[in-house]
Image (tube, rainbow, N blue to C red):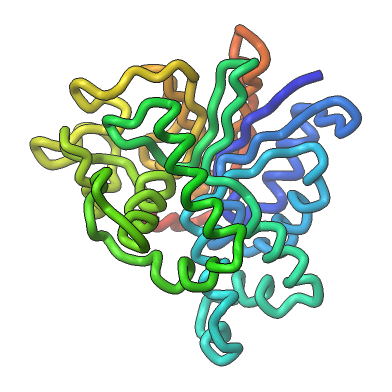
Length: 281
């Protein structure tokens, strides 16, 4: 039996298959944790989503910003859906899109496993969030996303403001929570996200910190595994295990065995990209 956490797939079906073969994934006894961003940019988002959906009895998936974007686009008119990139269009107009989209919408923002001492999320945590607070705030949004109010949430979740504050209410509170879980890289000591800072540590403006290095951040009693930050690459430190190693940009796709004290890492080459662009959200 093994539990493997896997970094951002982003529609890279071929590398995903090769990684599962390399770790000798056995659905009869193994479990997969996917760190979000299953879709977009890789050219094989439909195949990738179908594969992960087929493994749903043996996997845990948290939502990333690209997954939420797909959910939001799925609520638009067919004419508007035809304006997005061809990779996502193949999902939106597939015969099984309702099954895939409906399943994806029910995924959490945060997964905790206290027995094993881990939690998984896509991007990051606010400086003052303990594990318990992170769980509480994730559940707030998940209740809306999984319930009757999901359409209003998906329509209004976009925006860089406001910064997180416990005093926020309504859609502004939900948007701030979503931004932290799915878009955070750098922030100020007070937790204001620097959305335009996407490079490796050392390239950020003065006064900004990687979210896991903010001075005085809350102590957390679970180790974190996450993705989202491809320019950070594979990073292990401060109780954080960041495993988006840029497969969609021509880097590598990473699996981390989290039920093993030795933290075994397995990687395969990512998508073949002759002239990779600059990673974006």
